[in-house]
Length: 299
Image (cartoon, rainbow, N blue to C red; front, side, top):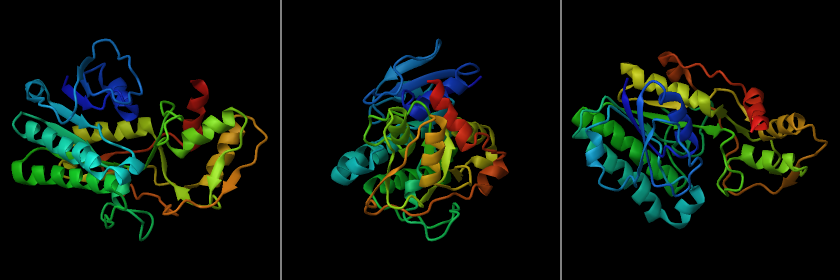
């Protein structure tokens, strides 16, 4: 049994991590509850209502593993408020790392982002692909990742970083303006409205179900070869936005056509991950897109 602290444990990804680990471990959520996905927690899970920039030293002595998912996640807000973004994503992460290096931490898992890559020079995107973020959000996630790797090299802190691509789950909030395309499509189609596609719909993405993300985190905690490394978290399969819309329309049994709009400025055309490095850890994405989308019907 490990003592696991999950920052952002009330959020979309964090809540699934809590679900996975709490039955066999002592799990604590650290969250400021600024935008919770889930307010209730499983029995036996402790909650610390705090910000990652706060003094949390008193909680580190009782922690073996830190899974750091808490972040400012809006690209739009980062463009408008880059200082706010940096304070949360860089200084918040640095605060946690400093506390962790003075404690007996067995593993520090940092959630980075595929946004650190910027416009792909080639696909599939491997971990050695240049990282040229296009937003303060991407830059701040990259800075946090670099700090984590440096803390491993300089201080021996056992850090490891995950770079998720397009995560989806039924706990995404379609009313959130920063929610993913899947939630937006499902919200419209379930209500009988046509999904809106910007551009020709032939842009591609690598969609990964949240429970596969959790599987990879589990491996990153248990495998020593994960220490000091960064891993793409994806399926390695590309899906066009047109294909995504067709699957969702079919799942809901609707007779709808997509509503096409002008392309979004700066939209990346093609994005798919090379996951061979994660596969060497033992990672196998288990949930195909259609099966994952079917879980939205069970809500």
